[in-house]
Image 1: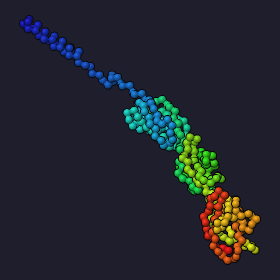
Image 2 (image 1 turned 90 degrees about the horizontal axis):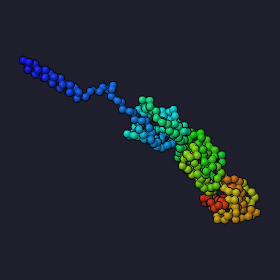
Image 3 (image 1 turned 120 degrees about the horizontal axis):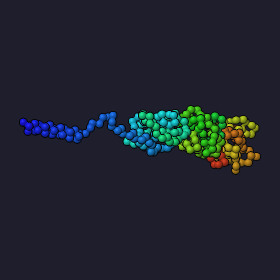
Image 4 (image 1 turned 90 degrees about the vertical axis):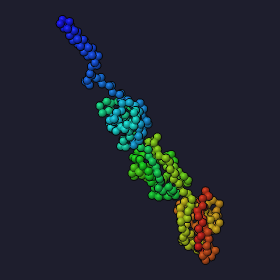
Amino acid sequence: MRLLSLQAVFVVLFICLANGAVAAERPRRVTSETAPKPSPVPLAILSIIPAQAEPGAKVLLSGTGFGGNATVFLGSVETPLRITGIKQAEFTIPSHLDAGLYALYLQRSDGTTGRSYNFTVLPLRPVLNSLQPSQISSCAAGTEREVVARGRNFGESSMLFFDGAVIAGTLLSPESLSFSAPNAPGGLHQVQIKNSPENSSVAMTIAVETRPEIGEVTIGDSHVNYYELIISGKNFNQNSSVYVDGLQIGGRGGQDMAEREKLIYIGCTKLVYQRHPYSPVNKDFRLQIVNPGGEASQVITVTAP
């Protein structure tokens, strides 16, 4: 009986020791309240490409900690940030931003704000698409010299350049500027528009036409032994010559002004040819105007005495 009681005691003691060992080996359950929270990834920008750009341009950022709800600030202007990779994002410069230097920084939805960086918003680059007209007469005057430059991104600060020199212009709209073509030698000349010294359009050419052109020939006043032929057109010169059936009259190397046939310069668009006919009977003859530089008009046929 006593032996049986001791055995029972040993059994109970063994069970208690076993339970204690199991309890000692069993890991303790860690609740969410006691688990250490991971540290947030620092919000940092490692590169900005490009470092300056125009409104409407895309800017690429690389860095860390952007998160899904980060936004970018340019000064006080907030702009959405698009995550494009693990450490990459991009944004578009708002189209209404004025040119200038801005503080660029990121902000997450948890309120974390990153370091700020200088970012330059450039003036919009002007785009020049056409000049209307693209050719003017050297003797054009008044509104005939008006040229309209068409394109986009023009503003009050836009400057017009003619062969590298600033000329006055009038802003008609963000897509058009007008100016009066300066007096310039014949040939091609360059027109360019700049919104800043480093921000210019491509240059386009405008032609100043000096080749004489005959519009019409009419009979003017008649005198005792000669009559006047009125030659109307454009680009006539003080020293222009008239060639009548190949004979040069007026200008340099033409017949002397003291002789019978004369060519009188009235203006850029008008010449008077004093013709002394051999008879009053009409006949056909060829007539051409040639300027001192050798530029010649078309040859026309005139029927007159």
